[in-house]
Image (cartoon, rainbow, N blue to C red; front, side, top):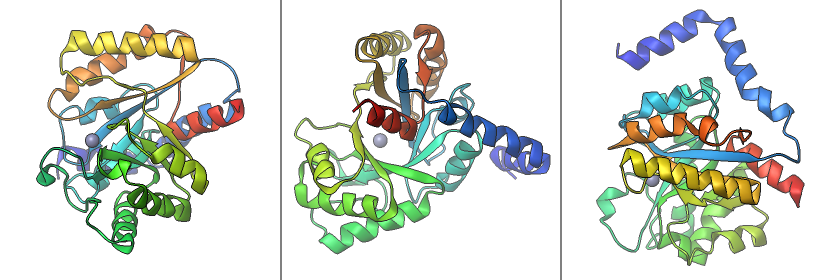
Length: 263
Ligand SMILES: [Zn+2]
């Protein structure tokens, strides 16, 4: 049994008390989400492949949104662990970029050469592969998110399954926002990448920038990553409550609800 298997076995062994704790953690902020006050949502991408920083992110002392890639060795484990630790789980859907190799996309990717039905089937299969998913975000996808036809099919499955779409915003020409509005699907944009450069000082600088953005706009959404350098991101993100005092950290669905209340 590997380490995570053991952790899960112990967790299951603890039974009700742990379940109650997880349920409480999951439910606590939701019931008290007010329409005012500053709030931030931090999304961490690229789970599912046993990447560096996975455990540190899982053990953060506040809720994050965990974006898990489908059909990978630790897809199911990561989604289950995130859920039981009170984080929100979404599918991190590999989608075609303008540049970069197709092999970087991972299995089951949405590419622009697929038919409408093939796209829908791939999105459905990915959702079925990631337990507890309540939303979808794009992994890469600069080309796919600029295609109205592709996004119509992806968003149609979101609507069918009641999932929201988070646009990672890898492309300023993305049509996600306007297509989602037209189709009546909940969607929002990432506003800031925390760790484009895997350097502790630069990640902390980005976190401060994020704090400033939330201060000015009232709410904010930022994305970080597990993977090479993921532990540096996790260490920095752990300090977010100190860097951003008075800001509440919400799961993405809570953020969508709060922003909905503002409109
Ligand atoms: Zn990604």
